[in-house]
Amino acid sequence: MNNKIIFLDALPIMQRLMDNGYDAYFVGGAVRDYIMHRPINDVDITTSATPNEIESLFDHTIPVGKEHGTINVVWQGSNYEVTTFRTDGAYLDHRRPSEVFFVRDLYRDVERRDFTINAIAMDHQFQLVDYFEGQQDIQAQIIRTVGHPKDRFDEDALRILRGLRFQSQLGFTIARDTYHAMKENVADIEYLAIERIMIELEKLLHGSHVSQVFASLSDLNIWHYLPYFREVDMRAIRINIPLTLSQFLAIVMYCTHHETGLKQLKRSNDEIKAAQHLVHALKAAQQLDSKRSLAQFVYDFGYHTARELLALQDIFEVNNITQPTPIIFNLQIIEEVFQSLVITNRTQLDINGKTLMTALASKPGPWLKTALRSAECAVVQRKIPNREQEIIEWVKTNVKIP
Image (cartoon, rainbow, N blue to C red; front, side, top):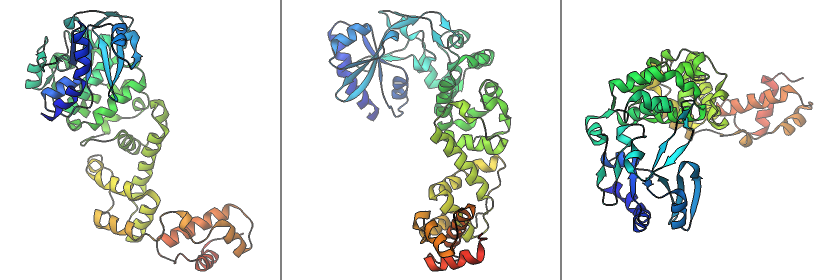
């Protein structure tokens, strides 16, 4: 089985822990995905060894979360999180425990975890330890909390979003009492850092079952507790395919006409710029009516953005976003136009501002930017060839020069 390999690579760490008298297990999402034959990105190990004991057994460790029991063990060039069995003290602000207690008992460790499907442990011989019927819930495709759902969401309100994210990724059904507790505890989301929320939202949007989950965000009234989103009517948004966060933000901005305030979400400037770029491209695409205008569009926004808009046409349609005619805006013509662009950026224009000012005996001013842009567009649209003298003559005729 292919997804065994990642566990086999980590087995020497577990073996060393066991050779020194400690219990050690794989745990969490990797075990769940192993059972489901899904791809596994990394594995987590839980052990009865304390953080100090873990550090004493390995040459290269990083105390990434030592106060919470987590030591990063570097083994043969890879990093593995090894965490001491623990229980949590009282939770502060529905988001983090006031203290943790290291224990020697696996049961006490897994009983604090969020959902049954994530509370299955696996030993070095690939035998499962399942105290909370997680395998049964995987078989039944149900997401249910470990223990009483209200208690789990009281401890950490982020689990509400995590449950929806798992539903989006796995296509499971959320158990009725778990969903009801999500609704009861949703107001506690306001205590969470927006950075943590956005990480979960991004993963949820990527999920292959996002179309059946997205409506729950409105049903649970989650948007009301999130900056930016609380200011718009999110019930009007429909998501029917997996999206990147930038694509999602672009659709929200376009449909709600609310293009300010994204910085409240504390995402990178590049991500926000990508969303804004897509909005501008979406607006410009609606004006396309010829190959010439498509050439200008591909030049201005880029080949990849044109392809991206094409790939998102289904979601634009369900959100009543006007589309350019497929007679002009289709993959074949986009490819053809891109391959035949005369220039792909302004540096390839056969003239620059200094040459133009000299030829026209004019001083710098706002006219120059207008002239260069007009010439650039004329070359892209093949109204004139990309030759210095012909560009100068075209500017004389078509641009107002002081």
